[in-house]
Image: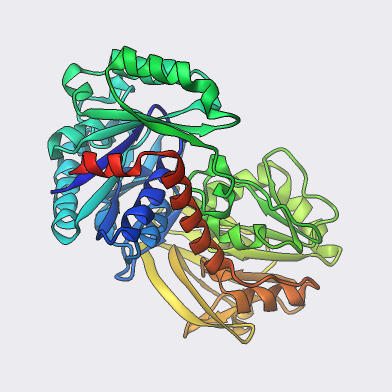
Length: 476
């Protein structure tokens, strides 16, 4: 077994991009490499070729490694549904809904699945690069931990600790981590690296040496801020950002349980599009050309959240003014006249009126549809995936949004309200160009090629500023 684990001093310190960059660097060395994250918490999910569900970050890392994503790359995925509860995905399939306290009791069962998945990946590849979750310094969570040191110790995987200097206090982050974790856990750490540095790295030379002296861990380098990070799909909703373009104004409602929000990344990259990720508490701008209701992990919960913001009134006014509306997955369900949840699959059993912009009705059911899909929309080829509960029917489905190959989605008689279950459709250059042309905007091709180029740039960035050879040597 050859493996290396990147743990962080906290959440959002850049672990996902570090693993992606190392996967691409290892691949370019001719190493058969695979990513692995024992436990992830995210509503940004991907569907594997065989219909399993994993974190979107691991799908990006698989792309960096040049391989197809698979369930073993993220054996435990937690998808938050409420402030205290989440759906638990084990090796690509939903097995339970659990409150935070109940989840702790599941962990011994989950650790077995995690180790089985890791063993299969290790047997099939030369190198596995593992991403931790949160921080090992959360010592209150150390009993039954499967995400950081609990996994590293159980699987015998060496660890490199990443600190985020952009937040400030990186010396305390790293030295403090060593101070609070168990000495046997600390012995798993083979060194550290500094991430997200802005300015002249030489100004941190004294701090770098201080960390080495205080911890006894060698440093693997100081990594400057990677300017291309915004061109790669983000894992966390806290990283949501608008585009940098001008022109067609697209507004996406930032729902409380927003899911698969990387659907919007290709639009954000368009120079002819101005994408606004609208936060709660703000009205939909009057100059919006298109309003998008994105995917959500809790359709009924986020429909109530949408109404609490007054966005239902804004949407009706936007539509009356001649504006366009697109609902994706859960957003599509909200646009209908009625959502019927007889078994409480999405929350509390009962019926809820939708927004009424599409003449369709959705019936929720416990079974989840997870599949990759290919077909046509607006006369163009589209590739994407479905990941949803519920089936939608109604008169407006006679005007489907796409054929994949069966009819998908619905379009209103005036053509200004649209809905689809298809995630990822904007990644296709031809469809994106045709869709934007209908709204009077032009498109720039090459989104997929841009992601590939950015992954190469990321690997170059790591090679320039970190001791990548030394990091890979730790794995051996």
